[in-house]
Image (cartoon, rainbow, N blue to C red; front, side, top):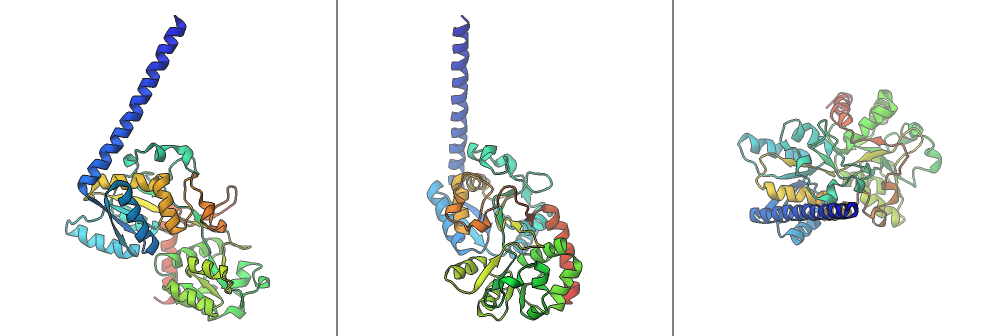
Length: 364
């Protein structure tokens, strides 16, 4: 009798489990059908040629839904959305963006809907699939912004004909070395993005006096154009560059050109970044079902691997073979100390303080 009862309970549990799986499958199929009826999803993303090409194609092939990709600087997108919303126009569904735009504009100005309740795929909700053991919501309420990328970022690059190993014993000695006065090129620290990120990291780890001496006393060249910074570095016009194009520098290094990316050195902890690997959903989205479908897909192994390969960025998932296509230097190592340049407070408070300092130092 006991054995029969146990068998009956087992069968009941199996049936319930099958119904649960079937229910999830039906909900997913219903979502796909609803997204197909809406016809498209509008995604704001980075001005990255490979991402612009690959992401819409992969999403359309997978679900039969158009992905209208609006690529460009986050600040420009934020200005446009502000203007549209003031006229009660709601054109965008999803943002793939850097933390500065997401935190200080989209989140602070209450343009977002919670993303956490929209996630329904078991592949996404399973904590064992994520390196942290759970999904990573860095916003204060832990529900509006999902972090998809987490990679080790270079701090600066050097021209190896001009900067020798003996020069790189300590970051202070290198960057404040009198022989490199006028030979350092820096991404503009007064604008959001790479320039202010690195300046704020220098401020936190090395202090205000170091920042003042580097950005003023060393008489650096300052530019917002990463291609120009990269060109200056390669030509030897400048020996050290902050904010050059990492992908190009790595490509040139593999071709035995005299450039090298520096991730850390004595006196400076390597930074972690998410780049444009933060995803959020706009409130009053014109295509809510397609938006929900997209965020589930981009957070899944399938979708995130597409985005990661196109961007060559390490992810927050643990089931993607990143080492097969991402430089090993970019993949965080468990147990190693890093400086999280995408920490919410650092991004919203410290960076703003340092940008004001830099504007004052540079007279801007």
